[in-house]
Amino acid sequence: MNNNYGSFQNAMETRRKFLFKSGLGFGGLALNYLLDCEKGVATSKLDRPLMAKPPHFKAKGKSVICLYMKGGPSQMDTFDPKPLLTRLDGQPIPPSFTTKDLQLQFVKVGEMKLMASRRTFKKYGQSGLEISDLFRNVGQYADDLAVIRSCHHESFIHGPAMSHMLTGSIQLGHPSVGSWVVYGLGSETENLPAYIAMSEGSGVSTKAVYSSGFLPAAYQGTFVRAEGSPLRNLEPQIDVNNQQKVLNQVNRWNRRYLADERQDDSRLAARLNNYELAFRMQTAGPELINISDEPAHVQDMYGLNSEHTAKFGRMCLLARRMVERGVRFIQLYKSGWDGHTENDQLHVTSSAQIDRPIAGLLADLKQRGLLESTILVWTGEFGRTPINQGKMGRDHNPYGFTTWMAGGGIRGGKIVGSTDELGFRAVEDRVHVNDLHATILGLLGLDHEKLTYFFEGRHRRLTDVGGQNNLATRLI
Image (tube, rainbow, N blue to C red):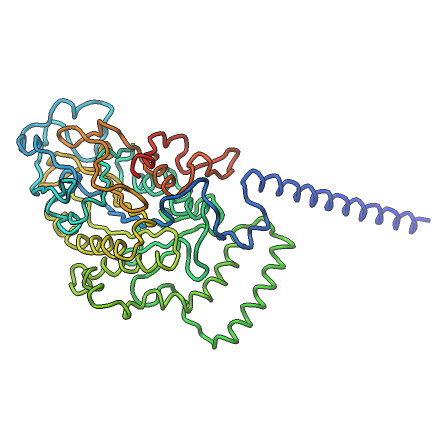
């Protein structure tokens, strides 16, 4: 009797466990479905998260090359001439600099004086766009440039400002611009990453600036070396046939695991796709960086024959090759713009390394018919002050600085906005970083208010609650 009762209890307990686990399982499936609906991402798309997607409306461009000047180039020494500052060189700081709503990192009120630019400006092209002698080569393409002189944001320290410019937020954990673009449009290549970052050094200060943040991991940027093997561990250690067999079997096991136990794990899904992409890249990657087939005059156009321009020139040439192969978003980093001391000499050195390569990139994209579909963005995390902070240096300035754009259907030879007469604050047609991002998305056919992802209880977007001054329609 007791044995029968014990068996009955065990059966009931097993039945309860079964129903409990089953109930949670079905509830989990329902919850995942609802969350996926809110995110706008179907679970089945985990298999192909980078598949090409249509834009919200007709696009002008389909890929982006971001030329990022790490450190913050000085606007009044590059693309924003200030004649009044020249006349007031060495004079005391005006009272407007002492207002409480402004923050500066090193300037001490009462000690510093105004410092004029040591550069000369010249009008270029039919548009007469004024550009300093630091960019004589880029100046030849003035009629292709839309120079935005009124950019601004609220971050005067490098890290947060860089995050602001490249992710739309000063907080860590937010997706980069490139990740949002790939999330919205997918990829046009199956053999290379959709989003690639390169630097003239071994890397960048933080991976957060090309991170996918709270977006699925598949939209993460991939850091690629400009020389040697583009990625670590890319060269095969066994013959291709055996490697394919191993990968196929591992893929079957992993996908079974993904389907049975971790259906909503974007990191695992991204890893599986990355394994397959890495295999295809063993052929595509080396072919991409092998520029020996580029004609001598093309290599010369990018400055590869000079030690001063070869490194950044190679990056620009690779960016063009990436665009040709369907890479959606490319970030090129150039450091050396943090002019706290000897600002002028620093700018002379840094600009000499990039002027010819960027001009070469513009020329090459134009002659191949790629500039119309490729958006170029030149920017840094902020500008510099018109003040000598000591030792001929300039402090950080997020209150008014310059960004220029070209390609992607943009009508060049134009200026958007302005700073005050000393180049300190954006005063006319002010363009916040959120506005800049909305403009980039708009040129790609993406509505920045509709490109959202549900995370932590609300629909997030690159432009947060900003992006009201969308310049896209005015640039084309």
